[in-house]
Length: 535
Image 1 (tube, helix red, strand yellow):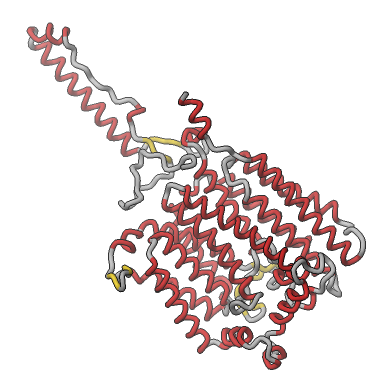
Image 2: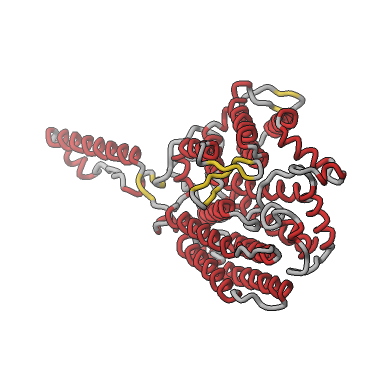
C-alpha cells in the first residue's frame, strides 16, 4: 500500500513532453526561416535544409544530455529557448537579406548558438549540484569585478557606439559584462544567505516598516557605487541598471522586507538624477526619450531619436497581425537585427506576435521562480530567483526602451538579438536553471544513484568512533569486574548487559557539498536531506 502511494507521489520526468515541445519549436523556427525566403525572394532559402539539420542537432543534443544528467529538470525551458533562438535566427537572416551587402549574419549567430549550447551541456555534466557554487561566493564576486573592468584596459577594450563594454582579440569581440551578471548572481546569493539574519532582524521601525540599521547599508551602497562606476567609466546605462536591479531584487527575496525596495528605488533615482546632470550621454538618451517626436531630436546626429521613431513607425505599420515575415521594411531601423529586433518582429508579426514572444519570456521567468520556490536551500532559492529576474529585467528594459516606456539603454533581447556574448550567457543561465529544477524535483532516494553523492560527515564519523570506543571500554571494565567477583557471574548470565552498538545507519549523513551555515530560521540539521521531490 505504501509502495503504491509513494510511486503515485513520485514526480514524472516529462522528458517525452519536452521532446514533443522541442519538435514544435524546430518546426516553427524552420517555418519562419522558410517564410523569410519566400517573402523576400519568392523562393525557399537554398540553405534551409542545412539550417534545419543544424538547429535540430543542437536541440536534440541538449535534450539527450538533460535526459541523461537531469531527467527531472523542467521540461519547458529548453523548448522555449530553442524557439526564441530559432525565431531570432530567422529575423537576423531577414534583416541580412535587406542589406546591400549580404553578411551571412544568421550563420554567425548559429555558430554562437552552438558555443552556447556546448557550454550549457558542459554545465549540466560538470555541475552535479548547484550548492557547489556556494563554495566560490567571493571568488565569483572578484571574477565579476574583473570581467567588468576588462573593457577599461588600454588596447583590449573597444568603444562601440559610445559605450566601452567590449573587449577585442583580433577580429573577435566579446562583451564580458554578460558573464559578469551570472557571477554576480552567484556572489549575491552566497553573500545574502550568509548575512540574511543581520539584514532582517535588526533596525528601527518607521511608519510601520522596519528599516535596516545604518551599518547594514554597506552592501547596497557598494552595489550602488559599483553600478555608477560602470555608468561613468564604461558609459553603459543598461549594464549599470541591470547590475543594481539584480542586487535589489535578490535582497528583497532574501529578506522579504519592502524597505529594501524603497531604499533601492531611492538610490536608483538619486543616481539617475546625478547621471543626467553630470554625463552628456545620459542626458542625450533622456532628451531622445522625452522629445522623440520633435524635429530637433529626430534630426540630431549623433544621439538623436531617429532610431527610436523609426522603430515606433515600423511597429505601427505592422498593426495587429503584422505584414508577414519578409514583407516589411525593418532595415529602415538602425541595428534592426540587434538592439531593435523586437521592433522588427513587431512590424512583420504584429502585436499578436509580440505578445507571443513576451509570453515565452514570461514562461521562462515563471518556471525559474517556481524552481526557486521548490528548492530547499536558501542559496539555490536566491540563485534561481536572481537568474530568472536577470532575464525578466533585461526583457523589460529592452522592450520598454523600444516602445518608449523608458529611455533606451543598449541592452539586447535575450536569445533573439544578434550578439554572441549575450546568447552564450543566456544558454548558461538556462543550464543552471535546469540543474536547479532537477535537484528541486528529484526524489530523495535517487540522490544515492550518483546524482548527489552521499558521504558521511567527518565530524559525525569521528563522534561515532568515539562513542564506539567508549562503549567498548565500558564493556571491558564490566567484564573485568565480573571476573573479579564470581558472585556476579550468575546474575550477569541471567541478565546479560545489553550493549547498543552504533551502526552506520545511525550516523548522521550529509551531502558532500553541505557546509556549516549560520543559524537562521531556514536552516536545517545537516543530517536532513536538503533536496527532494515536490512538496
